[in-house]
Amino acid sequence: ARGVPAELGNQETWQRRSASRRFSSSPAIGAFAMMENHQRRVRIVLPPLERYFARVRKLLGLADGAASIWFVDDAQMARWNRSYRRKRGSTDVLSFPASANGHARRGLPVRVGRRKSAVPDRDYLGDIAISPVMAKRNARRFGRTLPDELRILILHGVLHLLGYDHETDGGEMSRVENRLRAKLGLN
Image (cartoon, rainbow, N blue to C red):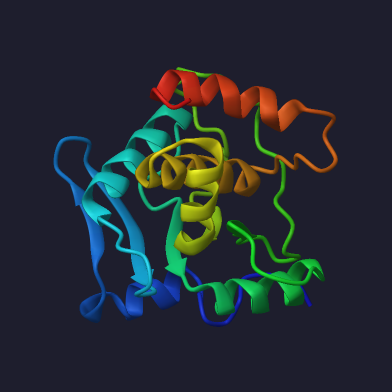
């Protein structure tokens, strides 16, 4: 069975647990999204990442509560990677679409700077899990800072929630991602 892991819940679950959780709020952009750190191995500074996530949502025309992001440890990522992708070991980012069958339903093509919503018929896209340990390794390997690598993974996860799949789309996701990275000031 595919879909959102029970540990992540769904939008209603997030709202019920909101009293004891940290919600993002960026007064400069008016963001309202969930971002939580559930690991302790790598230090994560959430406010700049929350502001970046708000910029991504605004650029793509997504609702403020379009997705949630969890930073989790490698063991959890490895379990989800095995359960949902049938791959061994950890990975840097996993996206869990909110659709009933666990597959993202392709939205409109993403156009940089377009104001219309990329997903006109629903506001909540799903959940994104990121491994800061893997992000730190990738940052070293690609000569980036950890915050930049985390920003890249947030964007990558959102594109997966929008239905892009770099493993099957002949480079379409990479082209869109590179245009958006340039627009957002990332290498």
